Length: 615
Image (cartoon, rainbow, N blue to C red):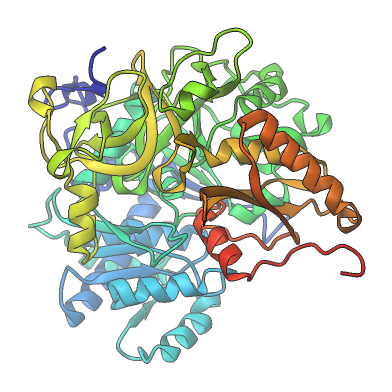
């Protein structure tokens, strides 16, 4: 079998075969759109937290250009006072126009943006402290209603007077006209200058800031448009997003794409979606040529909560691409979503299981826009041996959804534990670590040279034979296999559980457990390995379903059902099962269960277990 790698020409000509999108810094694109499309709407913000019917604020390119130039001028001045262009500008604002305007302005000014969140976001205070310690921003952008909180946080860190605070509202409209007129784009700003730091979720350690250049960002945006077959529609494209702007996928879709493509962005607050998923559903139907994205759970929630009266009259025929990523994609979710929204005009190829990561801006590969999704009924026993193959009739199987093909980059499946620190390509169908090489891959982690070398500087020992570069590979830490050119993700390397020489993927065990008993909440559990005298053993921690008030009285029944399901479906003995109180399992900032943090809490005995009456 050939090596599991997908070589691409060195110059990636497929990205822009017509020369329509010559790569240039973000500010140049924005200036062009303001000149050629001054009256076109670039941003529409729908605020359901201020008004349950949705308070809408729209901005034309003319208005947006003036506002962002005004903010950029202020940022240039503040940065110059504190050290120059390399200063970091932390965005500590709610998901509103001010946040996006600050991000755009920072990229125009040439300072380094750090997309974050206000100090009052629940559960993320420690993360904010860690990021401030790591990148030491000298300017903070926030909003008037969050200013007191921000200043209190700065005072608590002894930074009052040392870190400037800027409110975009102060230079909005006529108030910013003079600043906008005075703004001069940096003459020496290039595609290789740092644009922003994208901080990873940091589920088990201090978050790391991925250093991303103007080139990385622009290139990935072009990759997305081409890979989703939307390049011919630009700029008549609308992105609809409720994803957090401090998360990589939310930032690219909700804030970044209009800068380069000139397209329209419609933005909602994450809480607005969680409170009422139909808001996302309705917004998608309101616009033509829609692209949107969300984790798998959101598609499931939208389909589950959809009410006939809310769906009546909705037309989803304008949907072009719905990217499903950031967590394992379930076949059942894709089918339920299609069953719910297909009758409303959802095109059968619109759902796009995809794969990406912050270290590569966000997008790495996605499903073919012109073809149905690819689902493989994989042989479980073979998969546990590291081989991806279709299950024979009667064999144990698990459904895996392909994340599609790479576009404008190189992707390889590698045995990372090879000689002298260099990886070796694995054959088609064998599971290994996913490595990526392309212009969208970041420079490394902010001021972490050792981690940067280990993650961004991987080497391929047999690159020449496959026509691939030997240096500069990004180790994703994800496990997967290529078959027929399609990428299948099997799990995270750090989460892999090895029992009796077999690879056990935690999400497979979690799926079995959450369906073993109705007292277990869906998507709120973690499977992991713990050391025992006999080797690694499997533990599952799961939240109690909130409506199962009698779970404590049924603990023995629940435990038995879980152990039986795991034994029958995975041929392993569960070492321990812990049912914990609702809303107590650790989460990452990007909305994923933090398996390693849950494991640490289990080992330290700090979980909150459900107790039987009288115990």
